[in-house]
Image 1 (cartoon, rainbow, N blue to C red):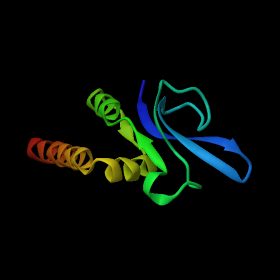
Image 2: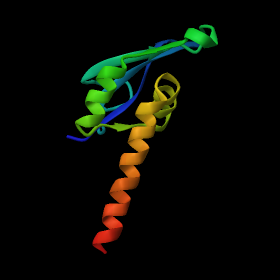
Image 3: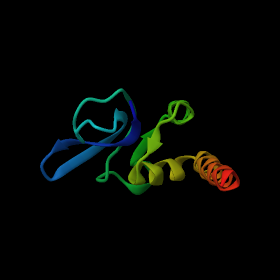
Length: 101
């Protein structure tokens, strides 16, 4: 099962909010999810419009989950070192593949 950390749409029309969740890649955007990792409300003031459980995000990333593009933006804002570690891991993997060839 391929897991992805992504935003799940919540709320009513013209007043959307989002949850940051771990879900199966094949499930629909607003479908079932494995775990709730945080939330984002674009209508709140900028400095406190999202909350993220960084320890759980790190856990899921260590177990093979992939960050979506939007989720990566929020994780980078909340904890730049996690984003940097993921980037270094990606580069190391590419270098390893390059050496094999």
